[in-house]
Amino acid sequence: MSSLYICKKCEYTTHNYNDLKKHINIKKKCAKNTESINYSDDQLLILSLLPYIDNKHIINIDEVKHLHDSVLLNQNKKELFNILDNIDKNKLKKCTFCEKTFNKIIDLRKHVLLNCCYEEIKKKNNVDNTIQFESEKNILNSNNIYNNSLNTVNTINSNNINNNVNLVYFDIKTPVSFDENWDMSKIDKKSNITCSNVMYTRLLKELLENENNLNVVIDNENESGIVYKNNEDKYIQMKSNEIADTTMQKLKNCLNELNEYNKGDIMSEILTHSRRIIEKKHIDYMKDENTKSAVQKLICNIYQTKKKEALDILNNIQKNLKQTENNNIKKIIDNY
Image (tube, rainbow, N blue to C red; front, side, top):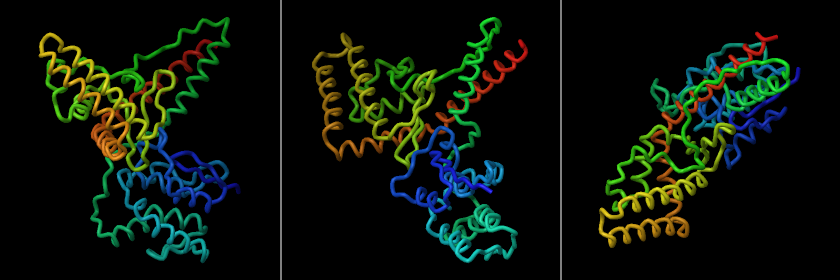
């Protein structure tokens, strides 16, 4: 039998369990991709630690549904790996917690990960029966799978020179690209935002009240996130500090736009002072490391408050892409 371990977060692949363990324990954690961003940390950990045997994963997502908001195992990895190492070292087939016996070591490992280990760590950490929450839902299909499937449809369509197939395209509501400025249509341009001491963060909060601007999903633990790129590339990974840098530049542009809009209504001296403050705050951010670090955390926290809504949009885009793909494949098949 051929065994394969795949990191559910980043798709790192190895035939060696110890290599996978080292990968999970590495100081610089791997970033979540567009599929894994919606699994809890404990789900990702268990799905990674259990292997594919003859190309079939020995566990499915339904078996870890009870951990959909759990972080307990991930926060106690040292104790978890001690338990698993004891099983491997002593070639155990009997659970030391509940005394249930298994035919294979791998079956015992699966049992411990899904049941007894979690309960044991929960007791030691005085955690009640309510699993700790991360406010994340499951997304079962990755964006890459959808994109690859759509590419297949396009290839089939291009090869059908003599077949007139009218493909179906759904009107998928997408956020504005992270590469572009935000949708400012719901911002009161006559407001006093540019006179606020916290003009940058205040504007960001107001912008994120518009669902068209929810194009960022931050994963604070891994200092990374995913952003909506465009209709072709969909979502891509970015480091959190790069997301914050781009955000600050875009906020600066928006603040200057608001300042310019109020010409004629506000004294020129006030507008000049406001413009200088907008510039100074951005310069301080770019040049002072302490300021940059503090503001980056603040920006990521603001994005985090809208994570659920941004994930809903991501999920809806993927679901609609899948529906489009299925309908187009069916339409192609029906024309043969």
